[in-house]
Image (cartoon, protein in one colour):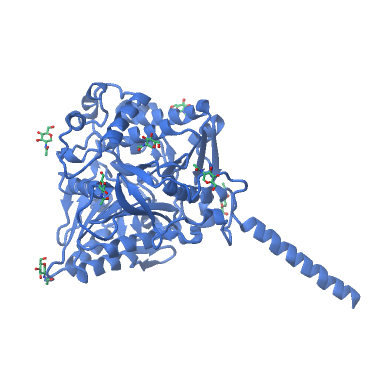
Length: 567
Ligand SMILES: *[C@@H]1O[C@H](CO)[C@@H](O)[C@H](O)[C@H]1NC(C)=O
Ligand SMILES: *[C@@H]1O[C@H](CO)[C@@H](O)[C@H](O)[C@H]1NC(C)=O
Ligand SMILES: *[C@@H]1O[C@H](CO)[C@@H](O)[C@H](O)[C@H]1NC(C)=O
Ligand SMILES: *[C@@H]1O[C@H](CO)[C@@H](O)[C@H](O)[C@H]1NC(C)=O
Ligand SMILES: *[C@@H]1O[C@H](CO)[C@@H](O)[C@H](O)[C@H]1NC(C)=O
Ligand SMILES: *[C@@H]1O[C@H](CO)[C@@H](O)[C@H](O)[C@H]1NC(C)=O
Ligand SMILES: *[C@@H]1O[C@H](CO)[C@@H](O)[C@H](O)[C@H]1NC(C)=O
């Protein structure tokens, strides 16, 4: 009898202890974390925003009015401003292009320049913190030996997905978020778009919390059952931050994915997208790599979340919708069926308009194709959503990403020009450019060779033979989970390969005017002084001579590298 009681007591104690241990280990907490004295109460809400783009050398737009600071210059400038800590999360690290790649693709050297600038942070005693979903990445190993603190997040164990978030937080004051990853191709051959926000510690603090969540997940094999209070969102779609952006009152918040990575108060990406779509009254322009309302893991399901929002906007609110989708080597042919079904919804409906276009891929020397447009954003007449994920069910369900929503408060139509207008102009520039094609009835555009040789069903496996360059670089443009239905679609086991992105055209060598200049501090500052001194007002045509010189030189040389002369 006595030993039985003893047993029960011991058992209870063991249980208590186990629960305690579980709780301790499941909490993601950042001990003694120092937020540099910046708090919600005294953070800065007087911000400046700047769109940054990478336009590949073989792409040029006639529209001079929508020239943005090159991504490499923008990131370099962020590093100039750093004083204490630079935090980076990127789906991929591949800045160090090979000699071979650089020899064909001069712009590839920008990746190396950025990499060496990151290494130089050590000399300035600036911390470099990196969260990564790649456990064994040679570039990160090198950076870690140098100066970086790298935390590995095992997304396979946590969500069976990938860490696709792509942003920087600098000193918890400035940040970058956008489509580009730390990949030389993002600074050379792909069309990327992002935004850099300066002097905005309130929002930066919130994005820093998203970063810290990844940071705290280092080597964790399960998702904590509760999150530290220090990871809770500061702002969300119901309680956005009121800030002044380029002297205009706007509201903003940070969203993230997937749901299991959402601490209290954080809005997830889908809720953010829903809100932006639902609040649109006149138009919704969407530029995205993949649009596919399907969710697949073991079996495929129709994933209606975004599709139904667009249908509602079209039919019930008569909002004009434009979809610009990338045609690339892994475009799922069913994309066209779904988009066409959206189009037919407007049949014989007054004021119902859905237009769809595809951004052409680049045809390479060996005849294979390669996607160009890597943009991932949505813009309406009053808001933007700029995110890291594609509009495919799997992405939001399994992969980690973040997004930024900036919106004008409802009210007078008259308002100062901000990133919202700039992004709309950018979309229209792309939309009307010679690189797009309209969707045609009963015709599926050929985005890859495979479609030509073998009409693809959803189950088509990509492991069997076929033209090699088309399907190798899995992570290149973010995973395209639907194409991997032969395995668990959230997981893309393939490693990025160094030599996939072949030079696009031989003519590059002629176009490129010698070695790519190094992005030095001076260059960045010159660019910035332009931003600081001049408010970019879109309605005003850029008669500013500096602006004209800048854009013309870039247009005429077909290069975003600005020569020192033009500055
Ligand atoms: C913000 O407030 C905290 C305490 O509330 C204080 O420690 C910190 O110095 C303040 N920072 C600034 C920049 O005013
Ligand atoms: C970049 O690649 C070159 C060889 O192509 C190598 O010598 C160098 O160490 C690499 N740098 C980093 C930082 O990995
Ligand atoms: C990540 O988690 C998976 C599943 O738990 C495990 O098999 C794998 O070894 C882990 N990877 C690393 C680098 O720890
Ligand atoms: C940011 O704020 C600092 C000081 O408050 C100012 O010197 C700098 O010009 C600002 N930068 C921008 C881009 O507004
Ligand atoms: C527009 O900008 C001016 C200063 O450039 C500012 O005084 C005004 O309040 C702004 N208007 C709105 C609607 O934010
Ligand atoms: C369509 O739009 C026009 C102009 O905005 C308006 O006059 C007309 O009533 C609308 N028609 C319907 C059926 O909503
Ligand atoms: C754009 O620049 C080109 C020359 O670079 C010029 O011919 C053209 O008129 C400009 N277009 C606009 C809309 O300003």
